[in-house]
Amino acid sequence: MKNYYIICLGLILVVQHCVTSPIPDDEQIDEHNKLYIEVLKDLTEFALKTGDELREFITKVVDEMEQNNELPDKDLSHRQQDKFVKSFEKVKNSEGDPNMLDLYTLTGNIIDFATDEFTVKDEQTKKVIEKYKLVEFSEKIREAVTKFYDHISEEFETYAHELDETQKQEQQKLFDWHKDFSGTSELKDKFNEIVSFFELFKPTLGKE
Image 1: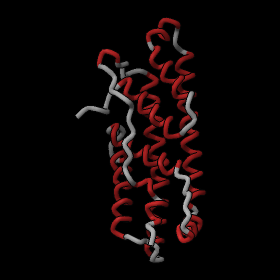
Image 2: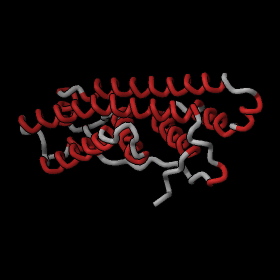
Image 3: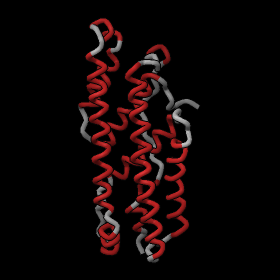
Image 4: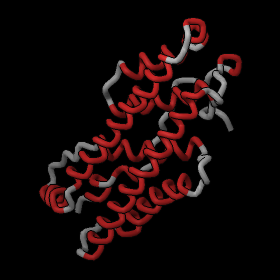
């Protein structure tokens, strides 16, 4: 039997999202920057709110599939479920100061689910997808991701409007970043740009 649990709920697998290279120390921007603080707050709130909704959904689906003997591999299914729940709890229990890699992992898993097209040829898998409304819930998560991205752009526009010309020149890297962020419509690519944004202030990737 085809393991349709992995196909339907592949978001549990941890995906490594990264920028091409770390930012040199002498090119970093002060992390006390107002925009950095606001975007970090927005990302944390988004990851916790949407992650909690996804956690509840996954738990419910896995429990129902198990009760209906629809899990081809119970151990694997529960291990994958536990990985997502733990990634959520790490951020939730961080007392407002989450580890950036934990935040990237949780958000990346959310976006993986939002971008899953659930295209399958197996008839049994198709029935499971329809039965548990995986596509509908994925669309709901995708809408939340899109709203989050739109809000980030609004935050940037508000911040940029408050800068004088000298400050704009000093923070040209932020304007270059926003141009790249606005220039892509793919949800995963936009998330990689979000990671790039934080790396401008407080590099995390590529460090021990």
